[in-house]
Length: 314
Ligand SMILES: [Zn+2]
Image (cartoon, rainbow, N blue to C red):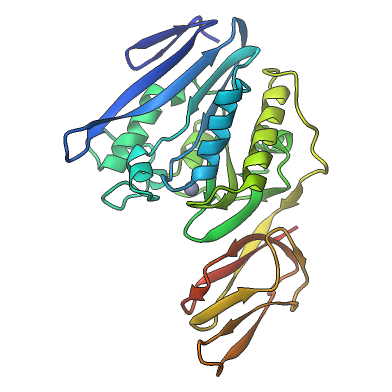
């Protein structure tokens, strides 16, 4: 761990806690938008852990997890450094939206560039100023749209360092997730750094299960990295899913699930139904595989082909 960490125009020494603002761009109204970065450095040497949320501006549970950790001072490490970005995509947060105002997704814009779109510039700013300092990271997300994700870690289980970090977090589920092009997780993995993704809850809704699992898991990761003494042991070992599949809606209509996120289901089990508003249609939905419901669409009205149940297979 270097004696001095430089982010933007700030130099942070061991033992210091500093709040940094990284300027990104202005709103059309001329207000300058910056990304707040909080850095907590212990005196004692140790790893640098990134805790980041709000890459998708409408995914609030991760923002709340970091807020509670800051407020309770649980974020302060006994050794090493915590760098936290509670809201990366400030533009999306202001607009209650996943993307930046032009519709681009920051998590499909890495590593970014200084001359690209706004999403690309946000990604570049992060990669230039913050990423080089990071040893390990947790990137907090929720399901997009109205899809609820049961608390889960996404990582490459064949990369031991990532898998160990995910097991240390010990959310109920670990998903062996493919790396998506231009995502932070792919860029970090290609550069040999372990940034795992915590997915829990749905966008634009606070969910106590998602928040509490996130708080407990982050404390366990900090303990695993030697940055913290106190932690709550998980009630059970995580289930590890090698693959997953979506059950999609065979027709448009109204959707009801017979199951909850986290439920175990058997192949061909009746798990929900699609109806029309006039009592003429009642289509049964069956599980296409045996597994667990790792994600569930809470939308009451769906179109043909919409993803309804995300089933993880062990
Ligand atoms: Zn997300």
